[in-house]
Length: 388
Image (cartoon, rainbow, N blue to C red; front, top):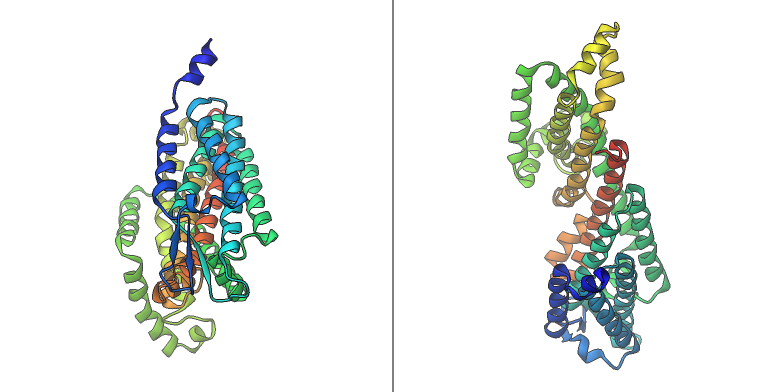
């Protein structure tokens, strides 16, 4: 009886998502057929593509997923239908793009339209809602991330998406793409590593010396208020002067533009979350634990290493998570001063009015940021344990 009542009651989130999906399907184009990479393109609605088998399968799965989202409470069924629908959506855009591309054409571009992106977001939210209701363990969420990444990898390696404009852009820039991917990750992870080396001792010092804490945190907060481009510009002058007057600095790569100002700026932005979370984490340790350790004859250093830091580590790791996600996003701005990374594609695409080139830089940036957040969240929750 309770199950029957639950099935009859509409899911509120489902109503919003299904309404958004219906509106997008009816009003927004599913794909743009362009004569070249910068042409406006001819919009085509999903309903205009009905003769294609992949679109018919997609619509059937969309209806099934919508009904399950509205009426069913079984999270596993909703997850399964959502996953099938996501796979069908990706297959449909790829096969539709292949069908719309003139034979032998190398300049035509097929770009996903607003309907595709709205449906992608709606299905993603349905899947996320189902995963939340299943209450996966932290590392099971990582397994799910790997599984969906593998699904995307299968779609990409199958060749069904090769006609999409973003993959056409990738095919002509594949070597540069992987070079910039390495540069992006090196800048993000390198700035994080330096910030940890500098920020962790500084946070410990601020915890031990309360008078110093206010000065350090206010200074780091002030740095956070400086826009990234302004900070890059501020660093260009002293670093350029240093490179011109100190041969050793120029030999090791310190210049007014390039990796050096980008790395320094990223480190400066990364210090506040690490220092602040180190202080908060150490303050959260029960003072009675320290007193008991001191009574047993442990030195201040032994208490720090053996008690304070292990107990404060989940809070410190939360700050590291914030820094990593922030750094992955901010590296894109570094491309404006020659720092490299995916931002090169974003700004080249904006300059050439080629939005598919923008997506070539934006999509992997979002993927890396999201993946790092999921993995570090799993690590943090595993350390905190079920009680947290």
